Length: 259
Image (cartoon, rainbow, N blue to C red; front, side, top):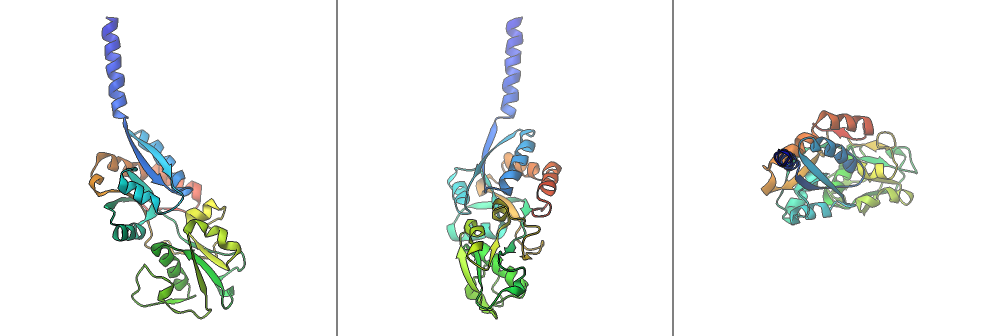
């Protein structure tokens, strides 16, 4: 009798273990993406999916790691950046769900508004095509510069057709932009790097991107995996009310849930 009971107990444990056996590796950048994914992990665990979260310090490696099979998913980039990576690098990656929006901001230690910038002022912007273009679009929207008609989202300093204050643009790695604040008159910084540097994206910017800008972040996977059951579980876990409440409470408007 004891043998039968032990066997039945072992079978039950193995069955329970199998239900929670699936583990995926997901890449994020430090700061909000990592913090939010820790909350997603809690929800996903209850749905039978274990998330192994790996942090990357830049915007380039996570897509390469995903394409190479070192990750099963990543969550760190907006759709225009992913589109550009797919086009330029030939990655067979797709987005499977929207996550959050990080309105980009212009920060300065030297002026309180864009109007205070003097002739010949310097502004640091990201050096990748999509985020650099995003920064220039903010400056154009605020009237500081004018961009070539029809230039689209991937604009560069070469697309600036009117620059009444003769602004010079320093193109830097996105992670270095907060450190550049001592050396330039202003810096256009992605929210995750602003938060990591101790800046308050809701209060500190002297100018801020509109919330409806087309830069909502996404979860990306390899195209071959897009219909896998774990993908549906991952997206459902991210889009849970628990995660939405965490975003609203933790970031107080600096990061906005996009679902």
